[in-house]
Length: 413
Image (cartoon, rainbow, N blue to C red):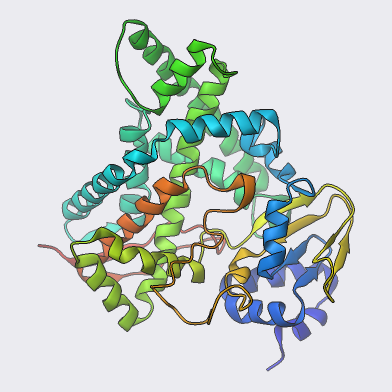
């Protein structure tokens, strides 16, 4: 059989990136094995990809060379669309401070109860995406983050379109997205509705706090900080960061939980071991299965960056590659998590590995909510694995990336 790289080299230049992207989602590991061995840096007309662990680390940590410039048209003045700016450092520190990690264990117990109740109420049949993997993080945002008196379907919509536009509607996605402008319009409309809701929420909460209420959640903490003038955080900044909590919590959690379950269930012996762990009295017993499953199928197989200056990828190696300023660079972290230079016996599924790798990003753009996601994702998976007689249907992924639905049936008590 012709190798991937031989087939790629025989393909016209303008058709290579569509072919590569298809392999990344449909045949990733054998394709990545060739890249890691023979072409760790792959230059294409549209972008350049790096596959080895060390090179992905450099791309994600060297924000002075490789920026998040492509985020800005989608996220505007939000600090995540900036690199090492004063606003980024200040507001990320604020958000890290108000998301108390002391609450994580209690959050996990709450997620367990919420997920279990939704599965019980479903009566043995459910679209797992709509009814569980999106529904539970939406409920967590309402209960724990302070987005009270909100409409769950609206919260889901706002998160969905922001994630779709920012991460799956970039210029290099044009060949798999039928109407990029429509996605951007949906994101803009979602944000307008979200701004209206948040404006009203902050006004109501501000009035309650002014009357001496002791309500304590991230939204109230942001309002107190803003009102204290102790830090630079105006009302617009409060609204933007409150919205960011929602946008970051829902769709990525759903995507990761679905991918983890898919990998765990695809091998019967692995599935039975994971189910035994899920049924145990120790909730964290399943966590290693989830981490390892996501190493095989992460929610994000790459992170995209823009070369800010002319630079060299993989310096001081025999595959060092010059790229000009403005080049889009994909750090293929899915491939990097199967690089034997960094991961022992990477082809083997090892639930005891305990390797999170790039699952929550790396560098100054590492996921803000990684501690919460680190318990919410495995707990959602755990509750699904506790079901008896599961008959999962086919996952619907219209563009090969985001799971939109997954019908499940199981034995109802």
